[in-house]
Structure formats: structure tokens, C-alpha cells
Length: 153
Image: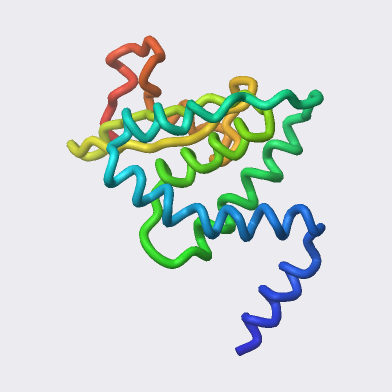
């Protein structure tokens, strides 16, 4: 029972703009999951790209990471299914709406004979919603990678 007051205190401690972003991300998350399931990645991605890249003053990496953390928190607190792809699509869309160019990365790796896939967002070539070494763990589509990248762990 002490957990709820802790979460509430953390929420109240956020700046008003952060609270708004967190709530919006929590509300959008199920819609992004549903859109991805109904339209598939290519059509849903094309729909998201229709949002024009807004003009925005220069932002720094820590500001982008702060938005990413809010989306990650929303993903962990939202009811219903969510995945790295849903979370990354939502983050990329929110960044685009704020005029921040970002890249959606989808990568794969082979672990114990099974193919694993993962999605993340990069800003200026660095992951913002994932560990910094995620690009070393997964071979990203669009990158030219050696077949040696697909080794079994």
C-alpha cells in the first residue's frame, strides 16, 4: 500500500510539462499498439511520418533522453500490451511533433539458435530509449554488418 503514495509523490514532483507528457504517452501507448496491429508496421510508419517535422530550437541530448524516460515510464505503467516497437514508434512520433529528428532502429540477433528482434530510437546516432550499447547487441536493419555479427551467445 505504500507503493501508490510513492508513485503519486514522484508524479507530483514532476514539472507540469513532464506530467502532461507522461499522461499523454500513457494514453497514446494503447492506440499505438492497436495501430501497429491493425495497419502493420509499413502503413503505420507511413501514417506517423505524415506529421510534419515541427521547427524547434536546438535541443540537447539530455532533453531528448528526459522525454524518452517519460515514455519508458508510461510504457511500464500502461495497462495492456506494449512492446519495444510500440514504445519506440511513440517516442519517435513525439520527438517529431517537437521538431526533433530521430531515427527508428530495428535490429536482430541470433541467440541460442533463435532470432531475436528489438527496436529503439536514436538521436544524433545515439540510443535514447535503450542502453548505449544496444547497437552492439543487435544488427540494425539498414546498417551494413558482417555475418560475424550473428554469433551465438
